[in-house]
Image (cartoon, rainbow, N blue to C red; front, side, top):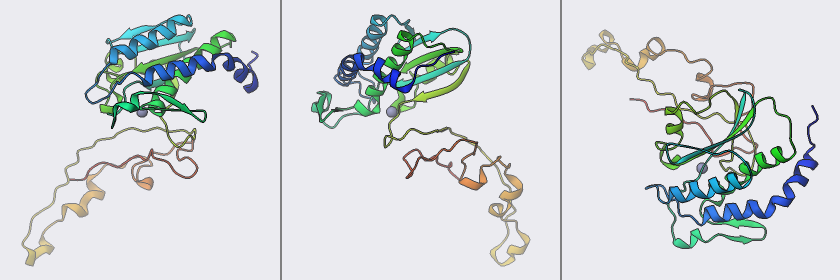
Length: 251
Ligand SMILES: [Zn+2]
């Protein structure tokens, strides 16, 4: 199995530079603000047109989400991203502009340029006929900014979220650093019982807060890092980053 070098991949990408920028610009110009979730169908239409134009399959799931795949077999590496953006401060933010080689406009970083990049990553792998031991699947979703109800949750309900997945890449922006991340949520409801007692006879009581070592289940690896389960991959980018998992609420 011969894989292209990084230089060969860059060379293959070069002829598409203009198309990638045009796609990103067109998406930035669509004011897909969420909340409330405006202009979603236009984003879907624009991305579908690009996929079709490049000879890639395109499946619409729950009206607002697109999946396109390349390769054969079950093991799947996902490219996953969203096209909604947080509300803009002014309409001018939906007029994309390029300054000093950088695209500006609402959603250009988060994450419409990323969508264009992921789409064209698949395009050049297809063009170069890079042999894959499985599939690449691009999932483009709505509603990320408000929790994913019409987006990733719809994929999940359709049984399509992460199906046969062995890895996932997302272009969610940070400081430009690429790193491993695994963000999730773990919600526990724990009841810890104590025994009330008069303040003057507190030795007869049992303080529920003092009992959490007996009442709470131990989570593997969770205690050392405020709820972050550790694995073999580095999760924190050099210099830190915004993707800090948060422990839940105590009540
Ligand atoms: Zn985002």
